[in-house]
View: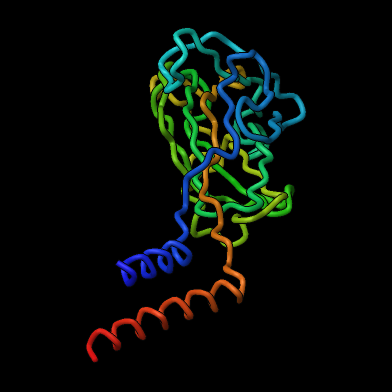
Length: 229
């Protein structure tokens, strides 16, 4: 019993369980861009882009009647690549294994492609993933961008993430979400259930903790030797 208790205490001290937490979540059901859980700020990027909050369904929002964030007034064909969209500023201080997720819905004439970007300093953005929305008028749910292996995103108080419309890959122009339509500047891009989640960074045990652990293991060994004698 003595041996079992000491081993359990030692393992309990040494083992730290990582729990996934929501650092920030926006569901837009309050008809504004204020974060609904956690902490963070959200804004529209692009000088002439306009936004609104509209009643919606079809996303992963559990609310019976939810809302999404919609933007329009996109650049003219062949111009303004990666200049219009949404930005989310979220501190990841104390967290790692980050995952950014969202639901999105484009109108038929909105750009089919968007890029998720990140910035470690809040302003110098780097492409992280290309997102394709090849059907208008329906939500594409559960988009997930794994940032866990991206250096510098963990434990960063200045982390920023944005979603911006972009040209079709390998071209210099936009493609409409619906192949039966042409791209138009009045198309809309909607987001819902935007979140960043992560795991708390395990604390490094103090030297005294290691000393107690070793002392406990030493006592276990001594007790075992006495029983054998």
